[in-house]
Image (cartoon, rainbow, N blue to C red; front, side, top):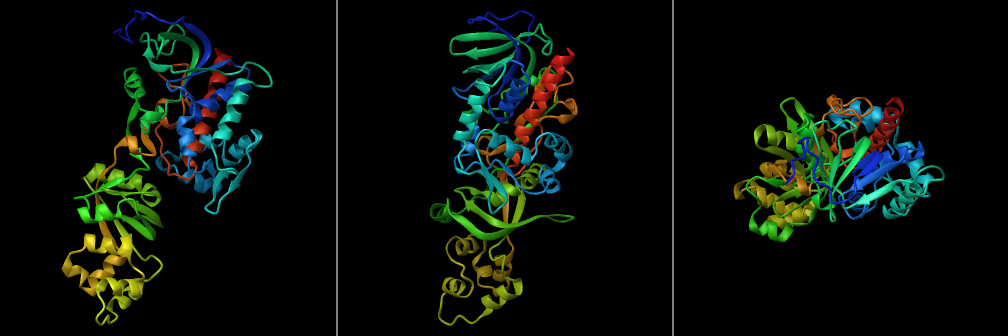
Length: 436
């Protein structure tokens, strides 16, 4: 097998291509970079390993495409945590208002839901993607974007990866193809949902070139509980939601996270929107100490004093289960969780039981595998990129999307940053080609 980093070029089974710009990855970031280039009159070629583009984008819209969020700019930028400043500079070029205007320019109207999230009126991703691809292929002026599917990028032909003499290497069903490009946009995604193309295979390719890459980690993910559930609880309640509950995560310096919402019990642990919102804290606690603990409030709208009073209320001949259902409306999975996590002595002690209803500790021992995660943390460090998202070590090579080192909760923040970084990378390429 040919060594990709040797000076000898591999034998190509397909005629080599010479292009102005090669965009590797046909997700939102790559397509937005292609849009910028198309609008600037620059011929762009999009290469993707899958048979069609936008597969993860379509999956994201399966239950309703959450395109972005309507909250204020300061709160919005804060969703990106430690990478706030880096993402904030990208949002300056394409914020939520701009993204909604772009969607509407494609004939897709959007609306703000009750949670502040922004959706297409028809809630679907496919019509937007179809309209977008039509515009890319058939612009009003200039060159249309050319798409090359089933082209899996495997590296460069030599060590001078950012130079014009270097060729990109792609594996295709018809054999290997070499592509020479004046500039390259890498928009290869993170490491989750490998079956849709985001498998993180690019990490060693860039690391071999000396590019600093933070390890890819699961984000917006589920967790396994320490010791697992009992067979009874797992068999009876896996897949059922905890509704109208709250969780908190505490550190030595106080409460780090506290929110009301819902999540789901799985066969091995927990997942769902409330867990995803705290997943970065939980994951990092597990990496640092080996475990993480959430405190579950089963009745967040009732004070601890009221709960204790109701638990202590005389129950006569009623069973404890009947008493909890009658006085506190605790039944089903909520009541089962108390029996699951408390011993017989604690369940029958009103003070301990009331305390558990308001703050039941659940210890988590591991994040679920990265391929199950909605997104990933880690990636190419912003510190090795120019403000235009070009790799300082590889002139002419730009990076965009989830392969950059950032993470965000669900709610439209993931797609917004992918679109914004794609636009920034596309603009960077235009400037680079003009100055070359």
